[in-house]
Length: 402
Image (cartoon, rainbow, N blue to C red; front, side, top):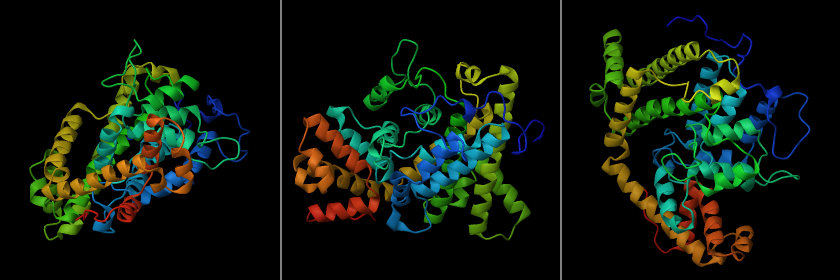
């Protein structure tokens, strides 16, 4: 690809990038750091949070005990941040903001990945449901208890906007949720601090969103091959992975399977990243934005795959759902994880004394919906290992996650 117009970190920030000197600020005003921009300070607060550390023992695809080499939410998050930062650099955006949004985007995930989220959403159906994106917002605006002057992390408007809207606007022009109702937690916070839910987020947020897709598409293939649930031969039938595999085998005919898998993963990431850069630059050339407001008013995502790559990426996702996420071995573990989350929810909701002391005191106050939300907050913050340990403490039999 042509490198003309691509930033390498040595050029001035683009006029349509988020400028930390012109941030809309924080909900609770603070004196700012003399040595860090507001977005650097957001990133640092995110990294030092309890929620960030917990990602170490939360599932990506494979339950943590299945092997030390599989990705967790933490390793996935770090990989997303690296790609987001590279994309932001290429477009001369604020790399620190893109990194901060990438690092915080999975905070609200439950133990046991999407299985835990589905189970908790079902249990919370009569109490407003459960949405991991809304839960991420609750964590950084309320549930983290670290600072003397405020709850949460008191992040900047731009980081919160990116967290909530990284996949696009949540609200249409009539104030209705797009595709599904807007979670109550987001609406409640938005009433205090308007995140402009009907507009598109910054390019930095868009970089974080597509970096998530690039990372898990490639790295779930890597973990799937490592587990034996996917095979190199199966990948040969897919457009993007098949082309890469044939090129690797042609150049390195005697290369072992492990190194071949790594070649596929790294080349796939490179191909997707370069495609996004080309497509995004073409969109920017067409739009000719001068300010960040031009980005928010564009009416579409600027950071995106090209048409052909979008089709290949969609086919790859379908392949992973069929052959990995819905593989009988994975589904068996998911069933056990689902049972653990449901059992714990019922136990905590029915008996406040089953919860730790700090949570127990709050659980004895409020009406049933408030108690259910408190249980969801506690349960969603658990790591996989802590959830299993709690289940063993409270129940005579705990399902095997294997």
